[in-house]
Length: 107
View (cartoon, rainbow, N blue to C red):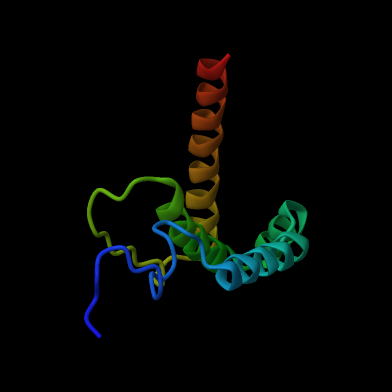
């Protein structure tokens, strides 16, 4: 039986209608993540890492905060713990300065 204009059978889901199962699954995952990863817990976990590991993680997380201009490979394997700590402190200073400037601009 060919499709005829005005046929109401088999129209499928309306355009832009959400998937209920997917929405409930996303909400469940969001709830689990919100309860598991509090800011305090994340900071405690970061502080428990060695400086090299902490810096590697922060470099990976920065990609989600700062727009990517180009691909950049950062090698931290040859650095000492003191050098990684210094780089980490400098990045933290720059981040805090940027946050402070952003808050001043918002006011």
